[in-house]
Image 1 (cartoon, rainbow, N blue to C red):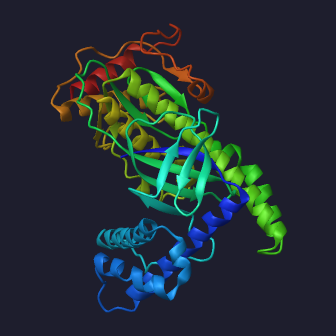
Image 2 (cartoon, rainbow, N blue to C red):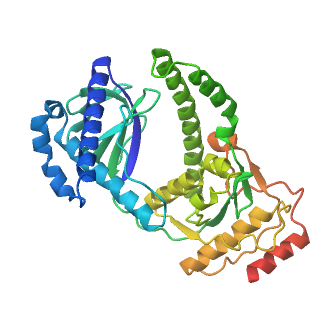
Image 3 (spheres, rainbow, N blue to C red):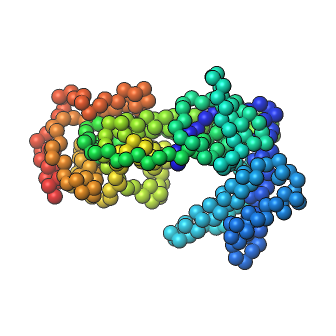
Amino acid sequence: MLTYKFRLYPSDEQEEKLLFILEQCRWLYNKLLSIINGSEKTPSKRKMQSLLPKLKEKREELKGVNAKTLQMVVFMLYNNLKALSALKKRGKKVGKLRYKKYGKLKSFILNQSGFKLIKTGNRLDKLYISKVGEVLIRMHRSIEGNIKQVIIKRYGSGAWFALLCVEETETPKKEIERAVGIDLGIKSFLTDSDGREVENPRFYERDLERLRVEHRKLSRKKRRSKNWLKQLKRLCKVYERIERKRDDFIHKLSRFYVDNYDFIAVEDLKIDNMKRNHNLSMRISDASWGKFLRFLSYKAARAGKTVVKVSPRGTSEGLSLDDPLRDYISACRILERGLEKLGQGLPSEPAERRPLRRITAKAVITGQVPSMKQEPPLAGCLSEGRRSLYLLASSQ
């Protein structure tokens, strides 16, 4: 299932209807959760769905919501219970599900029916939403496949988006001709086995001072007042801008590797465990390694490319922290492990004696990342000692 994200532009009347649907879904979620909490044994999902007609009779407002949307509230609740149970099995200390406070439910789902995409031939198309009407939508790209589900989501800044979920056919795997290993880091976002070192953009750290200013302004307002709500929207806009810039960077970087390589080896990082280091937690979150790996995996699956995760243990063994080629050698070892895991053996060509090619975040965003055919400058190439160290490590 592939998801496309498009901006919605509802009128004031349509926005009121969307907010009404969100509020009814929130009420239903809390009502079903209270029934579960009051039961000795968790009722089945089918039994909870059978309660919906009775709840509609008691609460007339629920009739103003599409029936499929109400069923998906049940699905959402049981998904949350399942996720909570999985965390408990892994030994995590978790409590019970919380009730949704007013305004905390941000999305509702239309599954299989209740929506229709209408092409207008203009800059803005229309998306028919059951019980709401035809809402203007900005279709900035074409959709491939049949739409199976639509998620309507409201962000903290007040912006509305439609997430169109499309079912795709499987793409056959392509023959491996070009392979690369990727070592993720904090100082540099990544270093690959072809000698590229991509700058870490640090979007959150760059806007940290602006966030502090907006948080300070919010703290001076009376809670839930009109001015407080206005300032909260301004603060949310800053967070959303950071998220958009980060997603844009990760999308373009992952697209570059999928377009240029048939096989990509990456580390199987335990990111949640790494965040326990409080000195590095914020930087790890800012880098968004997990999102990059997800984007890389689904893009590769669509293109018929292969992404293999290998154990990160020992990839930097015997390398000094001060060695500028530490991450590069680690990336070469990751590639070797990936090829071994796939049963392709070791790469036939040894590492070239050349310096790392520094790639700025701006170059990634503007699409100026050099391909593997471009050679770096000759100055500062690998010394014989470092080359020997890599070859020695590769032979082990």
